Length: 144
Image 1 (cartoon, rainbow, N blue to C red):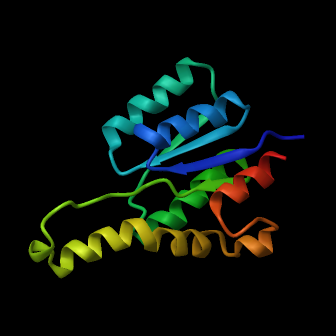
Image 2: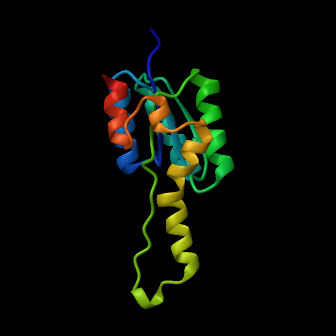
Image 3: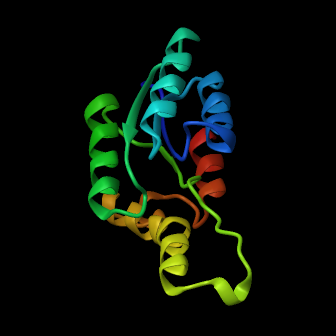
């Protein structure tokens, strides 16, 4: 039986890196993805030094082509995707009267649109894949 593969967006550092570290320790092959190429490369090397099966992909979760390419990279490298964790997210803290439409579009595209793009990138819904509707349910299902 092949090892399961986990793709984690926003995983160059912070919470995403922590999630990837835990899944790697649990035996998953890891696909790191982040917009920050330098930090992503450093994190990938750290995972390799720790003996984990890992690859990385520089991309922007708000771009449809990047999401499709991320899924293609994961499948080309490891042959499958079992878990996809939409961790990437941004915030833009400012007074409410200073918020402009481009500010809202940027936050929305990263924090909300990426989930829809993931479905488009893999070409099926969670239900069709036999997973729950939320990513944490998918993770629990895939690890069972």
